[in-house]
Structures are given as C-alpha cells and as structure tokens.
Image (cartoon, rainbow, N blue to C red; front, side, top):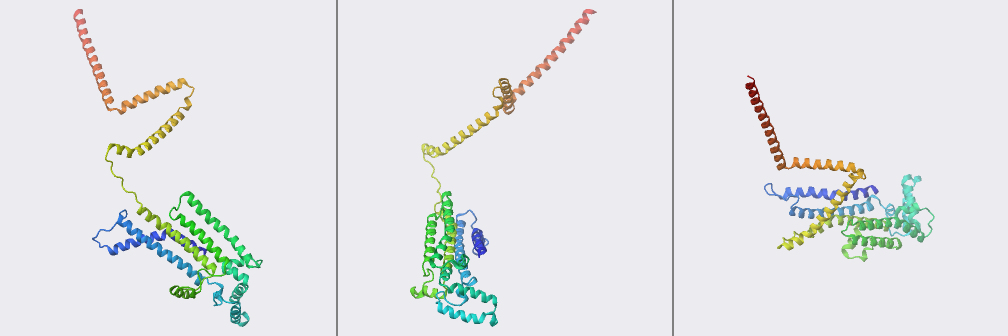
Length: 380
C-alpha cells in the first residue's frame, strides 16, 4: 500500500502535464483541418486551451485517485468484518453465531484450511473483545502491534493520540517552513485550515463511537441515502485514510491549477508611453539609480582588485617607478596601435625620415664625385 501511495504522489508530478500536452495536440489534429492554422505554444489561444485541458485532467486525476483509494479500502484490503460477512455494527451475539458457522466450515479437523482458520480466529479474537474492537475500528490492524497491555478504551485512545503526534508535528513544520520560504503561496491559508480541520476530524473519530462518513441511510436525503446503501460503509480508520488522501490530493491539484489562473488574471499590462520629458525622466529614474548603484559596485570591486595587484610593490619606490614607466610605455604603445590617426601620423613621419635619409645619402654621393673630379684636374 505504501508503494501505491508513493506512485500516486509521483504521478502528480508529471502525469497531468504529459496527458494534457498529448491530449491538446490530438484535439488540434482532430478539430483543426490541415489547411487551417493551429494555435502554437506562446500564443494566448494556445495558453487558454492548455489551462482548460490541464484543469480537466487534474480534476479527473483527483477523482481517479480518490476512487482508487476507496476501491483498495473496500475491495483489495477488506476489513475484519468482511471476513465474517457481517456489518460493521454487528452485535456480539450475531458475531458469535457467525463465528460458529465459519468454525465448522474452516476448522482443520473438519477438512478446512488451517491458514484460513487461523486468520479467522485472530480476526474473531480482535473484534469479539470490546476494547480491541474499539482500537481496531479507529486505528486498524496497527493496534495489534501495541501489545496486550491495553485494558481499557481510555488507554487505547491515549496510545493512539501519542502515535498521532509525530505525524502532525512533521506536517505542521513542513507547512511553516514552506510559508517562511515563500513556497506554495497560492492557497496557503486554506492549507492551514485543512490541517487543523483534519486534526479535529481525527480526534473526533477516535474518541466517538459514531461514524462520520457512514451515517445511517435513514438520516440522509433520498439521493444520499440511496448512495449510502449502495456503497459499503467505512470504519473510522478507513474514513481517516480516505480523508487524508482527499485533502493531500486536493491541495496538490490546487497547487498545480491555481498559479496558472492567477498568472493569467494578473498578467502585467504594458506601460503607457510618457508624454513629456519629465515623465520620461521620472519613469527612467529607478533604472538610472539601479545602474548608478551597479556602477559604484563595479568601481569598488575594480579598486579592490587593483590594490590587491599592487600589494607586492608596497614600500618599494624603485619598483613602483619601474612599474610606472613600464605602464606608461604599454599605454603609449596601446594608444599608438589602437588609434588610426596616430598610426597614420607615425607612418608619415617614418616615410619622411626615410626620404630625408635617402636624400642626404644622394647629396653626399654627388658631393663626393664632384670633389674627386676637382682633385684630378688640379693634379694634372
């Protein structure tokens, strides 16, 4: 039963979304012809259809989960009264008569099954004793694990209440932590209401002899009396299992459906365009303040990083001077490489320098030749 409960809660995580997506694509193929454009994800019509289908799928899954719990309680795991085919309000005398009949049928000396006989014997010992029957009706077969030291109804109730405390403390702590962290905001108030209502219902069922969900059909209106006569009645511990399942499943469904409609009904509208410059500045002022704060943070961080880089040079004047000279050289070189006008000016200067150098060399050569000719003429 614990495995099926876990699978049920795991199914809430992905089954509704998976079924809704596939169902929506199937309905689009069914109702939209091939030549007709269909809504696509991101469009308002697609989102509206998705919300409607998702709500219907979650409601159907919720009803299916509740029916599955009721079916397991009444059919798959029947209570001890169903073993004797007697109602849950059976008297001690009627129960004794039915036990004698079954004893003749299933006793090993009469050719019956020993295993079946032992099951019936343990069941009869439980519901034939008034104290153990009271405990079984309210706490199920777990009361058999409490030992035979419980001699009165009061001791059974006190023991059952003490065993309730850890579960409700854990659930209360989970609700408080989720509220403090701001998780599952939708329906938070009603979760606390349901939590305390569930606690009150459980205290009522374990301390009163009447059944909350299984009243007598004569005290109900006609439709409900007919339904009550068709459905098998439930013991108090079975009612608690069904109520817990109903409450948990309902709030899981509510947490999945609610935010979708809240977002759709409270979607932010596009801001209107400012009509004057003052209104535009007023609209931009919060963003400018945020930008200025971000710039200040970046400046502080860059100053801290720069101070950390210069930490090894503290107290070393010569090292600081060499570093300043090297940085100046790097800055000048970076400017020269990055600025197009500077690169052009350097290029022109280098070309002029080369031209002057070549001109001076040509002038020197001509002067050398003319001087050689004059010397030769004077010699001869």
